Length: 381
Ligand SMILES: Cc1cc2nc3c(=O)[nH]c(=O)nc-3n(C[C@H](O)[C@H](O)[C@H](O)COP(=O)(O)OP(=O)(O)OC[C@H]3O[C@@H](n4cnc5c(N)ncnc54)[C@H](O)[C@@H]3O)c2cc1C
Ligand SMILES: O=C(O)[C@@H]1CCCC=N1
Image (cartoon, rainbow, N blue to C red; front, top):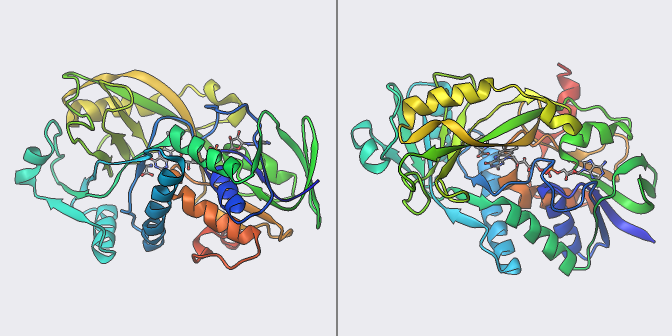
């Protein structure tokens, strides 16, 4: 049988692409190398942050529709996937990055509240605002229930007739008008192919002669114990947070209120050390955990500054941290979604929509120039 489309990789981006294709009546096969569910890629775990506050207008604009599509999936699956918590953004008052994001939320009318230093502790107890830092709260931001969302997208895909074959690793791709995809247990043909292989994208794309500047990082996902259980919890209305330019580290630190593991709050570093995706746990660099401990001692005095639980996950990053959403430069019936750079989950309904549009030969609903492959060829370094 010839499929209209094969999607390789059943992480959140591939699952949402397959979801949109099936809803457009395209006969679609979703291939996944591991038995589902699994915790070896980038989409596993209980939670992710959803927000509109971005420095770049194009991300904020995409998030407007993304919230609507998440609500649509909640309805279709009959599951709660989003919980509003607000997002506290802290950063050097006169720093460039903080100013850019503050101006962007004002320009784009993202609902936000500015917290003056004198009123900060009244609204956000148990957090020390760094001297010289300012704070704003994006009020409609919150938490996405990640594992549940991934299952929901796959479930709705199947309910529209889509086929998932898990535990099948793609080992070869033969481009052509009819594309042949070989796995370790079968061969399939399709008119169109979408590659959403997360940390394995570089390897898979090499079968099509394409090299992209993607770097895979292992992220230590750290949970910290509350000294008083519940003090940083969702039920106590504690928000998600992003600390820009912390004193202890070069990159942002972010956290989510305690919820999934009662008594533990997730606080992570937005960077990691390079790894091979198949040997993720050979990477044992813990300098990020040391920096997090110092930050927590200084700014979150209600947490024990030694992680209680460390899980792992991977980022696949591009040089400019913008995604890759494009057609293959040589084979127009191969579409690529890659390089989500540690911030792609919240966009998955839109990513899936535009990858589906590209694959159906339609004009995409958004300007995809920030996500083009050409940008790497223009700036090869
Ligand atoms: C710790 C952490 C925190 C994050 N926090 C946030 C956040 O707060 N907000 C946010 O918006 N985003 C966040 N992200 C980013 C977000 O989770 C990712 O951008 C997103 O999950 C990427 O999804 P993906 O589908 O591209 O990759 P993946 O989930 O890795 O999916 C790719 C799939 O392809 C499969 N595959 C690969 N090769 C093959 C093959 N040869 N054959 C068959 N299958 C194959 C893999 O097994 C995998 O299942 C975070 C990421 C991490 C790691
Ligand atoms: O994407 C997000 O919102 C989170 C928080 C900031 C760093 C990366 N992921």
